[in-house]
Image (tube, rainbow, N blue to C red; front, side):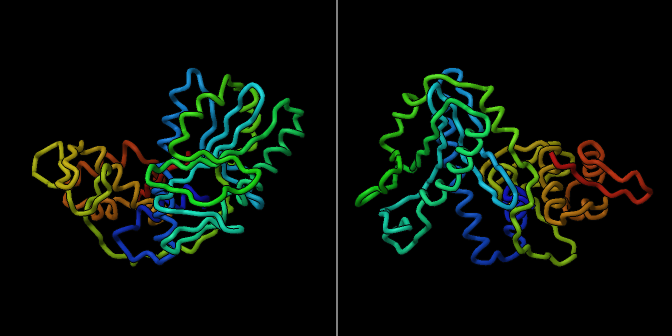
Length: 293
């Protein structure tokens, strides 16, 4: 499975089983990172007619992942987004927090990315310079000490400069990079938790992702999450939960499993959603599944 699939798997099993330390750390980093990426994406979207590639994955054995790739009139920008919070400083090949957290310095990661993008630029003789900028998006992030040499960094209070960098766009050049995209790469080899094959019930809210918070009333077509107060249509609720069942099993499921997973949703409702939104094996004992997009 690739990284996106693995994160979806961790999100689906969260609350049903104990995640190990590495899994919890990976899920936390992804969730906080996504918040920063969505914030930076919103900044890019303020630029008129802006074009960019988001979450670009290239390669398998020498895999790289790019948060944002933007082409201007003179440069190809690689934006690497970090959503750290607290007091941080650079030391040798690490970025360290005063609470003892430490990660490899972002510039080590971006050097590999920049080299790969530069090789594509050279292959296609693209008339652009490649520049990498590390973006810190969290307003509670404070950087102390010196910044790494030869590495462009924008702090939260400096993000107003971003629209000034991007004067135009070039979809044709972006399309060249998209040709290298590895949507279904298998580089991400991780151990997975095997859940016991037992009946589990307890609906998860698609909005806040809390388990066991859905108020169920007979003969009602809408449900409410008692945590986030979101009103949910039955199709939205059932589809989301059955999709998570498929992600957890990592193989087709039968109607009996879907019915048990979505209890106490009425049987006819679960059957309708299965038949409407999921592919099936067209056998007497149908197995339902989703195709990869």
